[in-house]
Image (cartoon, rainbow, N blue to C red; front, side, top):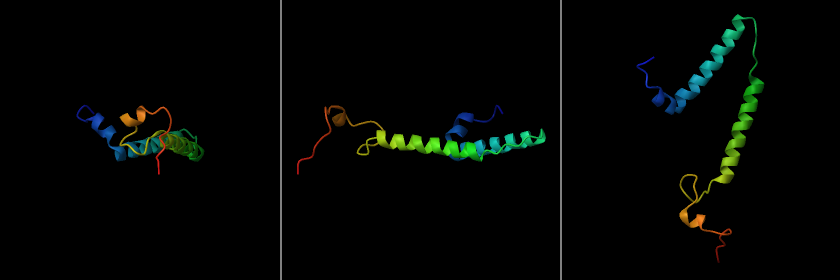
Length: 86
């Protein structure tokens, strides 16, 4: 375990997803050994709802005209939304 670069592993999204899935499966197996069952469908649905809600809010916050999530220096100086003259 000492020879594993955990920082790099956690930066790999595919590995993180696989680890989360493995933890759920192992947890379910351990519960089964003790005669308990855990139906995580409802939990999964709630997590998906929260995650999509967070993405929806994030989509409202970001400025689509700039790279990243911050406003441009020009946009930071606005006192009201810019109106383009046609």
